[in-house]
Length: 55
Picture 1 (cartoon, rainbow, N blue to C red):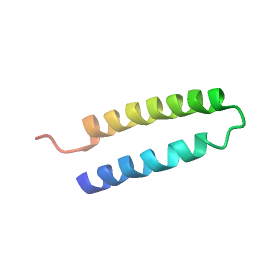
Picture 2 (picture 1 turned 90 degrees about the horizontal axis):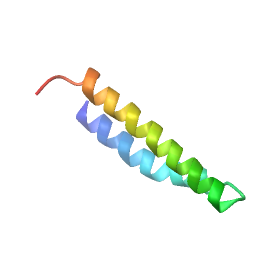
Picture 3 (picture 1 turned 180 degrees about the vertical axis):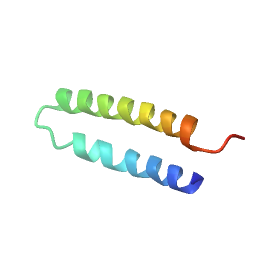
Picture 4 (picture 1 turned 90 degrees about the vertical axis):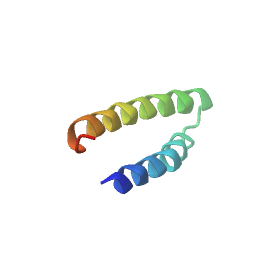
């Protein structure tokens, strides 16, 4: 499970900026990236808190 979570972080750090770079307006792309990173961080936190075994 831990390796899957680490792989998801790697994928997010590569995919999110590449998706945001497709915007024509750089400012809008940066805002889009910030929103995506915030959503991913919240999702990742929830997964770690509720779906990983306690240590």
